[in-house]
Image 1 (cartoon, one colour):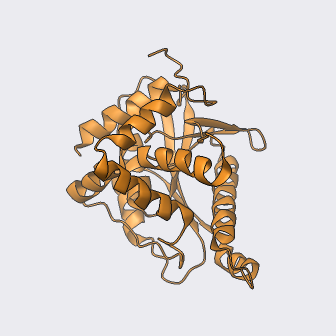
Image 2: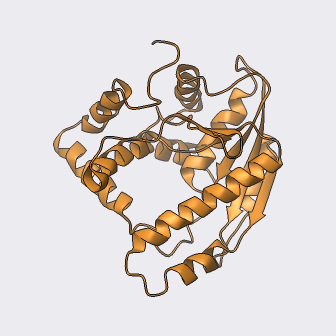
Length: 246
Protein backbone atom coordinates (compact mmCIF):
# COMPACT_ATOMS: atom_id res chain seq x y z
CA UNK A 1 0.00 0.00 0.00
CA UNK A 2 1.41 3.37 -1.02
CA UNK A 3 1.49 6.32 1.37
CA UNK A 4 -0.81 8.44 -0.80
CA UNK A 5 -3.47 5.71 -0.79
CA UNK A 6 -3.21 5.49 3.00
CA UNK A 7 -3.65 9.27 3.23
CA UNK A 8 -6.69 9.06 0.94
CA UNK A 9 -8.44 6.29 2.90
CA UNK A 10 -7.76 7.92 6.25
CA UNK A 11 -8.86 11.34 5.05
CA UNK A 12 -12.13 9.92 3.70
CA UNK A 13 -12.90 8.27 7.04
CA UNK A 14 -12.10 11.50 8.88
CA UNK A 15 -14.34 13.52 6.54
CA UNK A 16 -17.20 11.00 6.49
CA UNK A 17 -17.47 10.96 10.28
CA UNK A 18 -16.24 14.45 11.25
CA UNK A 19 -13.33 13.04 13.25
CA UNK A 20 -11.13 16.16 13.38
CA UNK A 21 -12.00 19.74 14.30
CA UNK A 22 -9.94 22.91 14.00
CA UNK A 23 -7.05 23.08 16.53
CA UNK A 24 -7.62 19.58 17.90
CA UNK A 25 -4.79 17.97 19.82
CA UNK A 26 -4.84 14.28 18.95
CA UNK A 27 -3.10 11.51 20.88
CA UNK A 28 -2.27 8.37 18.90
CA UNK A 29 -2.17 5.26 21.05
CA UNK A 30 1.02 3.40 20.09
CA UNK A 31 1.24 -0.31 20.85
CA UNK A 32 4.31 -0.91 18.72
CA UNK A 33 2.27 -2.97 16.26
CA UNK A 34 1.83 -2.32 12.55
CA UNK A 35 -1.65 -0.80 12.89
CA UNK A 36 -0.79 1.98 15.33
CA UNK A 37 2.44 2.82 13.48
CA UNK A 38 0.58 3.07 10.16
CA UNK A 39 -1.96 5.37 11.84
CA UNK A 40 0.85 7.52 13.23
CA UNK A 41 2.38 7.77 9.75
CA UNK A 42 -0.95 8.76 8.21
CA UNK A 43 -1.91 11.42 10.74
CA UNK A 44 1.58 12.92 10.86
CA UNK A 45 1.44 13.37 7.09
CA UNK A 46 -2.12 14.73 7.06
CA UNK A 47 -1.09 17.51 9.45
CA UNK A 48 0.63 19.22 6.54
CA UNK A 49 -2.36 19.59 4.24
CA UNK A 50 -5.63 18.71 6.02
CA UNK A 51 -8.46 21.25 6.01
CA UNK A 52 -8.35 21.69 9.80
CA UNK A 53 -5.11 22.40 11.64
CA UNK A 54 -4.37 19.93 14.41
CA UNK A 55 -1.57 18.93 16.76
CA UNK A 56 -0.36 15.36 17.19
CA UNK A 57 1.32 13.44 19.99
CA UNK A 58 1.99 9.73 20.56
CA UNK A 59 1.37 7.83 23.79
CA UNK A 60 2.77 4.37 24.48
CA UNK A 61 1.68 2.25 27.45
CA UNK A 62 4.28 0.00 29.07
CA UNK A 63 2.30 -2.96 30.40
CA UNK A 64 5.24 -4.14 32.49
CA UNK A 65 6.20 -7.28 30.57
CA UNK A 66 9.88 -8.14 30.15
CA UNK A 67 11.53 -7.06 26.91
CA UNK A 68 9.64 -3.79 26.44
CA UNK A 69 11.61 -1.81 23.84
CA UNK A 70 11.11 1.79 22.78
CA UNK A 71 14.22 2.91 20.87
CA UNK A 72 12.90 2.21 17.36
CA UNK A 73 9.55 3.78 18.20
CA UNK A 74 11.30 6.87 19.59
CA UNK A 75 13.39 7.11 16.42
CA UNK A 76 10.28 6.93 14.23
CA UNK A 77 8.49 9.59 16.29
CA UNK A 78 11.53 11.86 15.99
CA UNK A 79 11.59 11.24 12.24
CA UNK A 80 7.90 12.18 11.98
CA UNK A 81 8.28 15.10 14.40
CA UNK A 82 5.72 13.71 16.84
CA UNK A 83 6.35 13.98 20.62
CA UNK A 84 6.26 10.56 22.32
CA UNK A 85 5.09 10.00 25.90
CA UNK A 86 5.63 6.64 27.60
CA UNK A 87 3.35 5.67 30.48
CA UNK A 88 4.80 3.15 32.94
CA UNK A 89 2.23 0.76 34.43
CA UNK A 90 2.04 -2.54 36.32
CA UNK A 91 -0.83 -3.90 34.25
CA UNK A 92 0.96 -7.24 33.74
CA UNK A 93 1.11 -7.76 37.52
CA UNK A 94 -2.56 -6.82 37.94
CA UNK A 95 -3.51 -9.36 35.26
CA UNK A 96 -1.40 -12.07 36.89
CA UNK A 97 -3.15 -11.52 40.23
CA UNK A 98 -6.62 -11.34 38.64
CA UNK A 99 -6.08 -14.49 36.58
CA UNK A 100 -5.01 -16.60 39.56
CA UNK A 101 -7.28 -19.62 39.47
CA UNK A 102 -9.42 -18.25 36.64
CA UNK A 103 -9.69 -20.55 33.63
CA UNK A 104 -11.42 -18.13 31.23
CA UNK A 105 -8.52 -16.39 29.46
CA UNK A 106 -10.90 -13.85 27.92
CA UNK A 107 -11.45 -12.28 31.36
CA UNK A 108 -7.83 -11.14 31.53
CA UNK A 109 -7.88 -10.01 27.86
CA UNK A 110 -10.93 -7.86 28.55
CA UNK A 111 -9.43 -6.42 31.73
CA UNK A 112 -6.13 -5.71 29.96
CA UNK A 113 -7.90 -3.78 27.20
CA UNK A 114 -9.85 -1.77 29.79
CA UNK A 115 -6.71 -0.93 31.79
CA UNK A 116 -4.68 -0.02 28.69
CA UNK A 117 -7.39 2.28 27.35
CA UNK A 118 -7.83 3.82 30.78
CA UNK A 119 -4.12 4.61 31.06
CA UNK A 120 -4.04 5.99 27.51
CA UNK A 121 -7.12 8.18 27.93
CA UNK A 122 -5.95 9.48 31.31
CA UNK A 123 -2.57 10.52 29.91
CA UNK A 124 -4.26 12.13 26.91
CA UNK A 125 -6.48 14.14 29.26
CA UNK A 126 -3.46 15.13 31.35
CA UNK A 127 -1.81 16.45 28.16
CA UNK A 128 -4.94 18.46 27.25
CA UNK A 129 -5.77 16.35 24.20
CA UNK A 130 -9.20 16.70 22.65
CA UNK A 131 -9.12 13.41 20.70
CA UNK A 132 -7.53 9.98 21.06
CA UNK A 133 -6.92 7.99 17.88
CA UNK A 134 -7.26 4.20 18.06
CA UNK A 135 -5.84 2.05 15.26
CA UNK A 136 -8.86 -0.18 14.57
CA UNK A 137 -8.89 -1.10 10.88
CA UNK A 138 -11.63 -2.51 8.64
CA UNK A 139 -10.95 -6.13 9.62
CA UNK A 140 -11.27 -5.19 13.30
CA UNK A 141 -14.66 -3.67 12.54
CA UNK A 142 -15.95 -6.81 10.79
CA UNK A 143 -14.51 -9.08 13.48
CA UNK A 144 -16.16 -7.07 16.26
CA UNK A 145 -19.50 -7.14 14.45
CA UNK A 146 -19.37 -10.93 14.06
CA UNK A 147 -18.17 -11.42 17.64
CA UNK A 148 -21.16 -9.45 18.93
CA UNK A 149 -23.49 -11.78 17.03
CA UNK A 150 -21.77 -15.05 17.99
CA UNK A 151 -21.02 -14.35 21.65
CA UNK A 152 -23.58 -11.69 22.65
CA UNK A 153 -26.55 -12.29 20.35
CA UNK A 154 -26.89 -8.82 18.87
CA UNK A 155 -25.62 -6.75 15.94
CA UNK A 156 -23.15 -4.16 17.21
CA UNK A 157 -19.77 -2.58 16.59
CA UNK A 158 -17.87 0.30 18.16
CA UNK A 159 -18.62 3.50 16.18
CA UNK A 160 -16.02 5.50 14.20
CA UNK A 161 -16.26 8.26 16.83
CA UNK A 162 -16.99 7.73 20.53
CA UNK A 163 -17.39 10.55 23.04
CA UNK A 164 -16.08 9.68 26.52
CA UNK A 165 -18.03 11.84 28.94
CA UNK A 166 -15.96 10.79 31.96
CA UNK A 167 -12.85 12.47 30.56
CA UNK A 168 -14.38 14.82 27.96
CA UNK A 169 -12.39 13.28 25.10
CA UNK A 170 -13.54 11.73 21.83
CA UNK A 171 -12.06 8.50 20.50
CA UNK A 172 -11.60 8.46 16.71
CA UNK A 173 -10.80 5.51 14.45
CA UNK A 174 -9.32 6.85 11.18
CA UNK A 175 -8.24 3.43 9.81
CA UNK A 176 -11.75 1.99 9.35
CA UNK A 177 -11.49 2.14 5.53
CA UNK A 178 -8.09 0.37 5.50
CA UNK A 179 -7.82 -3.43 5.54
CA UNK A 180 -5.31 -5.39 7.59
CA UNK A 181 -3.76 -6.76 4.39
CA UNK A 182 -3.19 -3.21 3.16
CA UNK A 183 -1.55 -2.25 6.45
CA UNK A 184 0.73 -5.29 6.22
CA UNK A 185 1.73 -4.16 2.73
CA UNK A 186 2.39 -0.64 4.01
CA UNK A 187 4.48 -1.99 6.89
CA UNK A 188 6.65 -3.99 4.49
CA UNK A 189 6.97 -1.21 1.92
CA UNK A 190 8.01 1.43 4.47
CA UNK A 191 9.83 -0.92 6.87
CA UNK A 192 7.88 0.12 9.97
CA UNK A 193 9.75 -0.67 13.22
CA UNK A 194 7.17 -3.10 14.60
CA UNK A 195 7.79 -4.33 18.15
CA UNK A 196 6.81 -7.86 19.16
CA UNK A 197 3.70 -8.12 21.34
CA UNK A 198 4.96 -9.26 24.75
CA UNK A 199 1.56 -10.42 25.99
CA UNK A 200 1.67 -14.20 26.70
CA UNK A 201 -1.91 -14.55 25.40
CA UNK A 202 -1.19 -12.94 22.04
CA UNK A 203 -2.86 -15.03 19.33
CA UNK A 204 -5.02 -17.02 21.77
CA UNK A 205 -8.37 -15.26 22.15
CA UNK A 206 -11.95 -15.15 20.91
CA UNK A 207 -10.94 -12.41 18.48
CA UNK A 208 -8.22 -14.61 17.00
CA UNK A 209 -10.78 -17.40 16.58
CA UNK A 210 -13.17 -15.05 14.75
CA UNK A 211 -10.33 -13.65 12.64
CA UNK A 212 -9.47 -17.15 11.40
CA UNK A 213 -13.16 -17.91 10.81
CA UNK A 214 -13.60 -14.75 8.73
CA UNK A 215 -10.47 -15.44 6.72
CA UNK A 216 -11.87 -18.86 5.81
CA UNK A 217 -15.25 -17.34 4.90
CA UNK A 218 -13.50 -14.74 2.74
CA UNK A 219 -11.38 -17.43 1.09
CA UNK A 220 -14.49 -19.46 0.21
CA UNK A 221 -16.46 -16.34 -0.74
CA UNK A 222 -14.07 -13.66 -2.08
CA UNK A 223 -15.15 -10.18 -1.04
CA UNK A 224 -17.27 -11.39 1.88
CA UNK A 225 -15.51 -9.20 4.45
CA UNK A 226 -15.94 -6.11 2.28
CA UNK A 227 -19.66 -6.87 1.94
CA UNK A 228 -20.02 -7.34 5.70
CA UNK A 229 -18.35 -3.97 6.25
CA UNK A 230 -20.64 -2.33 3.69
CA UNK A 231 -23.66 -3.85 5.44
CA UNK A 232 -22.60 -2.21 8.70
CA UNK A 233 -22.03 1.17 7.02
CA UNK A 234 -25.55 1.11 5.56
CA UNK A 235 -27.17 -0.17 8.76
CA UNK A 236 -28.86 1.69 11.60
CA UNK A 237 -26.18 0.70 14.12
CA UNK A 238 -25.53 3.76 16.28
CA UNK A 239 -22.67 5.97 15.12
CA UNK A 240 -22.26 4.52 11.63
CA UNK A 241 -24.34 7.09 9.74
CA UNK A 242 -22.03 9.34 7.74
CA UNK A 243 -22.05 13.03 8.66
CA UNK A 244 -21.59 14.28 5.10
CA UNK A 245 -24.46 12.25 3.67
CA UNK A 246 -22.20 10.45 1.19
